Image 1 (cartoon, rainbow, N blue to C red):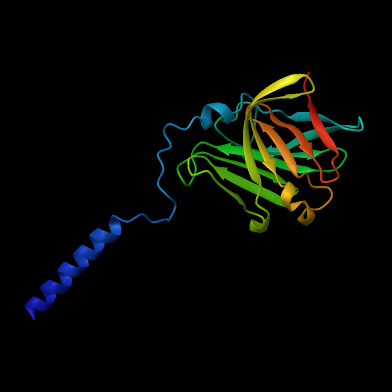
Image 2 (image 1 turned 120 degrees about the horizontal axis):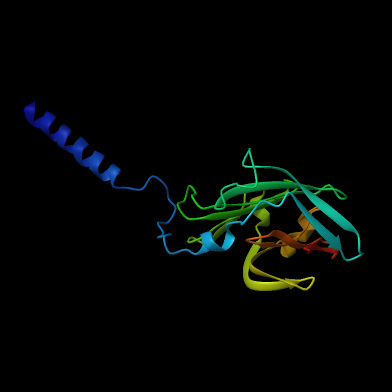
Length: 199
């Protein structure tokens, strides 16, 4: 009887040790300490308005609705989520960056009209459309791009072109975001594009 108790107790101890040494999630472990995304995509300040002009010369303002629940001009530069609504087409646009993320590595996310909302996790380089996994974007990183004679650095391009038949007319399929300045350009499925006016 004592032998049986000893065996059971030993088995439980070994099982507990083995479980404690196993990760609780199946996300691949990545060393995020060398990732430079924090310095590239943290913001200098929160823009309360962003003015755009489209390929027909029509201007449109994007007004800040809220961000992080209580956004202000001194918001944490490395952890933010900002939501805008446009004045003409009533776009709802959200973008944000988290230095401290559930997967340890920084994460950048975007959303248009709650139809296409995707996240990119640095280090793992995983991208996913959290609204609809069937229309995940292609994500590209540009060192710089010129928009209306202004050069923007550290730009992320979110491209849904290969899924445009699954996206509504009023939702952009290509989005250009500058780490420091936010939305700088977007293209709709009818090829009408809008560019940031930055004085």
